[in-house]
Image (spheres, rainbow, N blue to C red):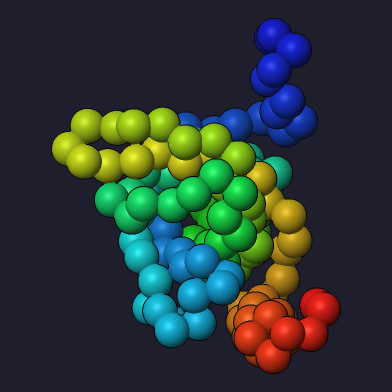
Length: 125
């Protein structure tokens, strides 16, 4: 392992459908779709056609398999930041994300809406 590889937890090669939207993009409630290529407790790498910027904060929604959750498959939402980008074939992009916060679905959506409203009104969040 080289010094630039900061993975703190094991990665699992898994193809899982993923939905996501940028936290600031309240006007895009449906967001985008993609597919994971690997996943861990601290990050997700996924492929999509959506162009994103490094540092973008995303609300990710995916069904976590039993192998990772330890219980039945469950849909999870989390907040993650894009920390790596790779060009892929067929006009697609690969994004490495670091999970910043774990939330229940309602809490994540409520927090993203509150943050967007604060930013829009000029308040500090």
